[in-house]
Image (cartoon, rainbow, N blue to C red; front, side, top):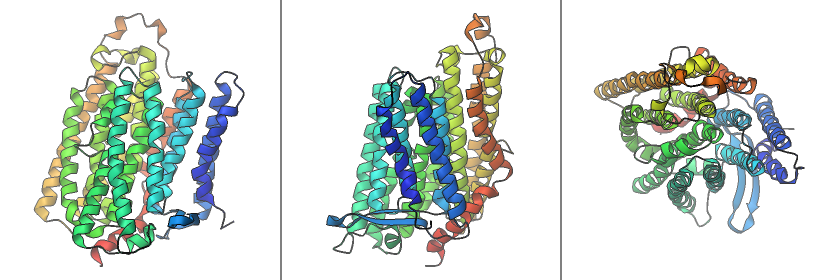
Length: 500
């Protein structure tokens, strides 16, 4: 059983099973919904089983590796493998996608195509996290753009075509830089292209060339992460997308950029990373402050949550730039924590919209009385977003703080300055989170309207909210569960910087 291709099965199952949707008997949407949900659950169980019984926690090397020759003509391999950094995002992908499929229950228009695209996106998102070949990483990175574009342009709001076009222009533009970087690394110094991650990790490049590669990858991952000033597609996309698509975008898509920064920029190009890391720290701090100040000015509820996502991604960039064990572990924890919290907030924003059909915060108010269950879950998850102690966001951001303070790379004055500016960002977060809650749920605006058409969270929606809330509190109380996966691998990556 050790040679069983677990990862190939995990990557290929959603999209191949999804293509069978078009052959299902057309008896309303019920069959399609249940079929898609079953595929997601089977996939999640398979992944959990493979990782629980086939993965050794204390081994920092690649595990469950698979290596098949794919195209003989130019030595292209299907290489997959996972380690402590990729295991968390893959499980997060399975969990969030399953809940997003359940959240998409009300979608009735073209539901075959909709559910197929959800499953295609599932494969496209697990692909980059488990790829061990640069070209395969690029192909998987691209595979996932088409479903997002279609989900946006067909099931979005009024400006859906504008936001879908903006999304594809930004991300495809970033992908050009990714492709150039991949080909550059693959073709450097040898007649045969070497696209294997492990071979590339042990190779050294001239500093100038390494910097050029680094900038190319940085632009590609900065669009996806999103790092300012390449973030402007994100609020538009979130503002128009259906909330189940928003869950996948906020929960997983943004994390692919952060994962790429760790996997390629840190691991393959350590010299350039140590030159650029101070700049990453500066950009990360500016991003936290900038997005936290821009968020209260957004009238659209989903855009306000989108800017809070941009602000929280700043902590991930700072953790990557800190070049310390603690900082890198904090980053991985923040990737998973923000995946849960971001997805939950967009889901709750979407369910609120289903009730009241209002998008703008200044038109809302007084909803707490009519929909108390949504009010309660929204309040708790907003507290998680503003890093309330006992929730995952608090632990993750605290450990990123420690990561900066324990970093051997920076002077004490620099550390104090960055920590101070980050602290201001953390003070600004409650301002936009709490004002959002106040505008939505308190006051009398909707209370005077005939609220007979309001109905509170049903069992399905409560199940989704609680399913996300449990890991948020669980990680907040016992973060060791996530650290046990990443600690050894983080040390192995950082040994590149200090022991060369």
